Length: 436
Image: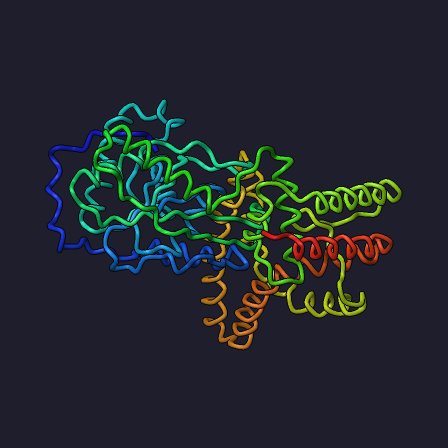
């Protein structure tokens, strides 16, 4: 978000402190909840106690930006009612406006295509300030764009100036809440998401500070707060180690993915790293010994059965029998989403965006057409079968994928199973020894 200190002088004066702007979720909030429910297996929330009530007065949500505009679907499902600051590019077409609405701003990378970018950004900042002064709720991505890399991108100055402008008005009731979002395999369908909500950022500033010093202090507090709800490591290699080891620690345990990543953020303990490197070497040796025998991974980890293999084989067939009909009956929208991502996505962090923006509307049209056709034909039994099959397939996709991977690996790479279980046990032992 571009910095700005110019507020439109022609704007109406803010309401009195006792007055509040009416915030309604709007239809986009419901649509985004539907997208999140259809596309993700589960969205969990850590720190929900930090979420202000809908009538708590002015709130500024500062959100880390990871997986393209899909982040907005996830955040909006949780934070509504709120208004978003959105890129002009997302709202230029009718199709884009079906998915996105809010206070439009021009990103730096889009300035060449927007000759009046300065005016748009100046007016956007004025509208944001008025919304907050009137007791509204605003959501901003301070990075301005998204990345799935090992660190957050530099934070733009706009959010800092907006907070300072609010404080300069004499008001002190603004709540600034940091949020982070963390995806399990972010480009894949029916994977899991965790939203982390941090405590309110304190805005009590020493009045003897100069305007410049206050801005620096606000920026420092914002950076620390967003760092607490995100994961920042030096290199992509470090990120891979942290994400995969953290995911392995969640398998068969109550450990949460974000909590495990945060635990490893400042460095993976040497025994854990040694166990991980040894297991990786075993994987390479096994693949070299049997190059035509495929080893499957989930979140970068080859899964194996913890219980006896026949139990998993039985689960594979049972799950498959009740999972497959819903997939076949909804194959057109699934293929539409897959093809859209394959043809239109130019980076990993927009794969899920294209899958959902194409796959979900096609599914809704397909769903409506089938329901109407079956009702018109009087095929109530088939209608019930279709509805139940669709729901069961959605609920089973994530679990069936994991069972399939575990069964494949156990049957095709049985020698690696004991090493995988030993690796997992070593990680759990080290977590128990870790004083963190």
